[in-house]
Amino acid sequence: MDAFINLLTDFAIPTVVVAAIFVAILLFVLPREVRTIFKRELSSYFTSPIAYVLFVVFLGISNTLSFFFTGVLEGGEADLFLPYFQYLPWYLVLIAPAVGMRLWSEEQRLGTMELLLTMPVAPWQAILGKYLAAAVVLFGMLVLSFPIVWTINYLGDPDNGVIMAGFVASFLVALCFLAVTSVISAMTRSQMVALLVSVAACMMLWLSGLPHVSELLMSLKGGWLIFWPILKLVNILGVMPHFTELAKGVLGLRDIVFFVTFIAFCLFATSVVIRLKRA
Amino acid sequence: MIEVENLQKHFGTKVAVDGVSFTVNKGEVLGFLGPNGAGKSTTMRMVTGYLPPTDGKISIDGVDIEDDEIAAKARIGYLPEAAPLYSDMTVEGFLRFSAEMRGVPSGELDAAVDNAIKTTFLEPVRHQSIDTLSKGYRHRTCFAQSIIHDPEILILDEPTDGLDPNQKHEIRQLIRRMGKEKAIIFSTHILEEVEAACTRAIIIDRGRVIADGTPDELKARAAKAGAVLLRAKGLAGTGIEKELDKMGESEKVEVIESDDEGITAMVYPAKGKKENLSTAIYSLCKEKNLTIEELRVEEGRLDDLFREITKTDAED
Image (tube, helix red, strand yellow):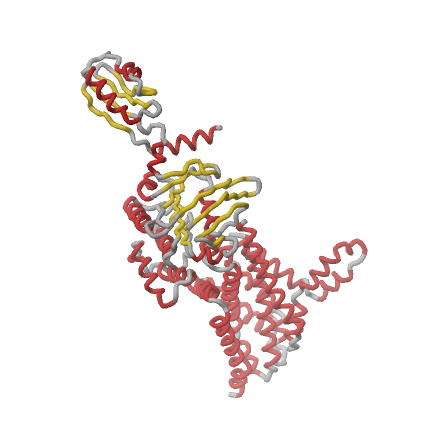
């Protein structure tokens, strides 16, 4: 019973509050065009099998692997960070591009881009509406991961604040990957190409933040210094350090700014790609 | 309502549209003719704000499209060439989406959707998913989308493509009817369509406007316009063709068939003598005691003009 109340206060209520804030922004802050595009995009995830398949795949991978492969149960401690959240971004490297691959490539394949962009909407409205719909799908996936949280709470007495921080950090990473996918899907009419290139890009983005990689990058000497700006940029773009900080429950302004800037930049880049495509 | 001035579009080094200018007023239906790849679709894409022009000016109802793209787009209804649709939606869902995007107030959505469905005869497939529709229905769904917000300006890229003859007829009637209160541009390959629905037509070839006028004016420009076809029976070997040639009214006589029984010939008028040609031929035949079986003044056909002016251009 205690576990149930804990779950309610620690997870369910914050989730509902976040969802309510999102709906309020959608209804009262964003223009009607964004809302209309959001609605259409979200419903098209659920009228085709794609969303259901992704839900099953994601939940299947994330839950079973955490239980049986990474040894949540053997740890003896009621802690999710190492076994679960350490691996979650790796699944997101695959899942976020799979959710986002159709965003703009499908428009180009069907030719509906011509329809959409001759309607009286600003490109940013279309980009944002579509992005938000895909973000909601990812949000739903993370929300549906609750059985693992419930299990941990049933078995022991974990620090639910840290678990929540882990989910928030994972969601932000997923949003970054989704934003990268948005840019790449605007470049091609093939969903498959968008998926593969996005997975590769997200993988690199994630890997460049690995401690070994960033140490290696920063320790290069001699001729490598010509590439210093690029190396530094790769190092800065590394998502992992920000994820680790947030997931530990340290809510740093720096990390939040990183995520927001990163996503905003990618969405802007999407609009540039679309403009170049038309010209 | 639509003013286009010296419109240019370059794709790399390829010039797709090269200085096109035209104006379409309310109550006018402008037909766009031209061979494939002439620049019709590119021009339409620029007018609807999809493609940015390399150079030139487009103004929609007094609004320069570069100054206020959104306001200009709000006045236009557009049917793109391939009639693209979101195939995972139902017809009604898609039309509702289009209406919302086009700024139809939420209280009037149902009425707008109903009206568009009725106008384009989509009632039987209203709740059907778009990916199960036949080509004709798909096309009409996209057409319905373009008129859903009752725009002042309609731009239709091959609106009758892929329709059966009855549907073609319906759509032409519809364009004609709507053309009374709107400014409409539509492109087509079918020349009879221009005569059936347009108040004016322009022929575009290789990015340039090479002819501009009412369908009648254009027809009159065809080489055959005003020529007289004569089929007559009578005495063999009267040398009627020579007589016709000598008559002074004609420029050229083309004998199509001639034997002992009679003659079939096309007589082209000399410059400025169109009006009297048929009378002159008539009296000549009377004089020679020929029985006239057929005497017909050719109207000139758009087909002929189209082929004459686009072909000579392509060969040089």
